[in-house]
Image 1 (tube, rainbow, N blue to C red):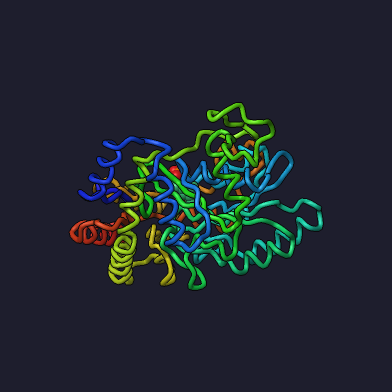
Image 2: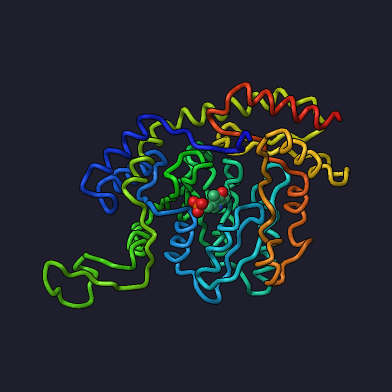
Length: 383
Ligand SMILES: *Cc1c(COP(=O)(O)O)cnc(C)c1O
């Protein structure tokens, strides 16, 4: 099966991991701050906190923004469940803002309307989590303008988008947000096996995230409530979790980061090849601007043919092509349906879901495999 996404691991990656294995620290060592510093420099953010997954980073981000019981968080329905679950972890409620049918990103128009209604009914969200679907930034400038109007914080879920830009600034620079989160799962742009990272320019938020990824413990005397008992002394001053990344992961991340531009270049090449080869087929090709990280290639099939997506999906899978669908709208998951969400809540995301297929897309997808995907999809649509 040709996978829809997969990591690229070189001998340099392996050597970097072996170096850590032979060193004094497998975790809580020097590779973590080295990786954090490199990511912060690359995305032009002041602070960065590496953790064991983007899911943990999203949880820490909301925790640092004091999201709790009774608060409301809004995100996109066309995302992985973690973008919404992080609010539930904090005891908050979730709602979904429908997407733009061209970009699959949170629609600023839908957001504006929903904010006006929420302001009238006194149910404004505390935080909005726009998602960088397929590696392309949402209109963060517009989303930020709307959020500021109502004093709402923003966490960008840029799990798909390290290396992308918006408004000629790197995604992660938090130009239009409080915190940005990246994922380093193997199907994402760079990998640490499992891993994630949160960037911010706010020292206060950074400090909270750093502390809460490790139990809420501090060794900083300035933050302690009691007098030190001696050199071994530390204090837990609040509740945190064990969301730490290991040095093994951080070393892999640092090595992968050095190839980020190569990964983006290769992804863009595949994107262009698909685009040219599929232009004559009865399907809608994805729209990505030149600043995307090219994470996914999502085609949309004709809306009017019943079961067409399922037929084509099964055809491709039967021929050994590991297509996927991004995403089942989160509000239609049983867990969220039990909270009262149902079909019709986000009609555009629901429609996009019914028509979408993600084709294999990863930097070293061999050209022969790309051609096979193109040929097979062509026969699927002409049969
Ligand atoms: C992958 C992904 C996550 C979760 O990332 P993990 O690192 O696996 O926790 C969250 N949001 C989006 C949009 C993702 O694609």
